[in-house]
Image (tube, rainbow, N blue to C red; front, side):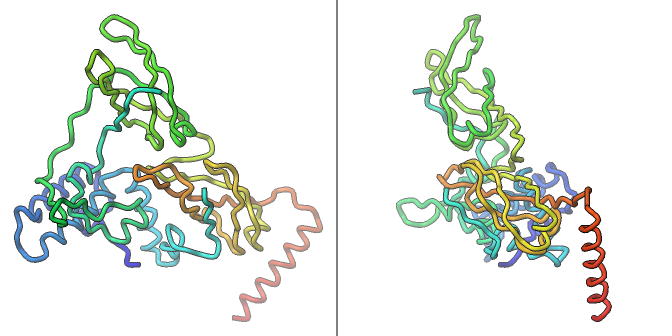
Length: 320
């Protein structure tokens, strides 16, 4: 699969801050928007610009993309296999409140998402995107001109959930001080909610809407990046050298993952569909980082065997 250089698409440097990336996007989007630019290829160019900003304009997606970018630039790592392709090591493990609407749309929602045309690269590595919602004519509708960010809703309070609750969805009580009185509400938190996301409780206050900020507590097992989870597992040196299996925590429980011979410290393995729920009903992925542990309490016999191993490796290296 062809690697997509999103920095090149937007014409920005790797070190560009989010403000510069947004400015570059707005300038290019206005220039190539199909409602403005009727030249051949303008619509395809607009799609590329939109796709690039979908990734670089999102801090979590950008962090993941930067890992892939560095692996691709080094050339020595099969970035496609490590971050999304199939490999012999890959494990595929199948897996009463107020009406809640998740606030804070992605750029796809901001622009309408109707041009579609997201590349295979984007769909495979960044959770997919609709190929274009269609109207009665059967043709993709064009979005309106790019708008600025939506105004921040007024937040009446906050609610804290664990990562497990964010994974499964939960109904929780929240107590709010409103207009000098205390209100207790039972709030349904949808599956896959993210930290900092705002939810709207429609008609919760005398017919008016209320907004709550969600705080997802840190989980010692995982680091969350968007809909993906990152876990670190300890791998004994012998298993890293010879291959083996290791137990990996997932949101559905511990699974056994095969460790191939020659696993390197920090190597990343991908468990497809073991991440957080997505808005389209799917699941993100879990990335597993190998932490190879070197024993510090070697016996004399083990030291002797390692010295023999070192001698054999030196001989082998010298014979090349």
